[in-house]
Length: 69
Image (tube, rainbow, N blue to C red):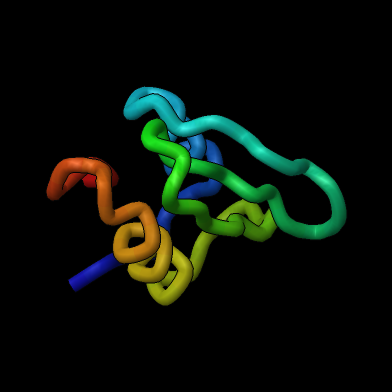
């Protein structure tokens, strides 16, 4: 079961795994994976809902299993 997470924790995990910000415009931040083929959008809320966490894990499929925990 996926739990809600703080935005800073998700961004830190993405940075540690080689992710980088592609776009920082609007109400979402677009992140791309190290290989450049996968991307995800993170809203700028303090807390990410379990659905956003689950979506981010599935969209960044090139990252190793358990990278966000």
